[in-house]
Image 1 (tube, rainbow, N blue to C red):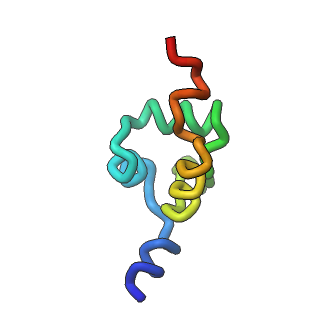
Image 2: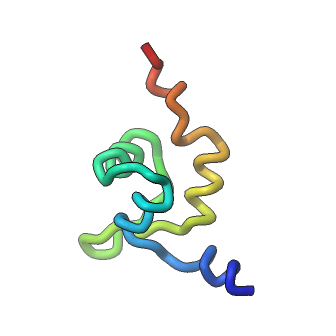
Length: 69
């Protein structure tokens, strides 16, 4: 049951960076250019890990979208 609670919890931008192992700049670019699932609460970005997982599985974070040179 605790796993469900964590899946439903909103995480911060910093936690999302740690979760995915990327820098803040990368997440901000993904939100802007790749429709990464995120919600803005006031001035703060919030994320659901389940939404992030689904987005990654669908190829949202794939390098193929940027045309690897």
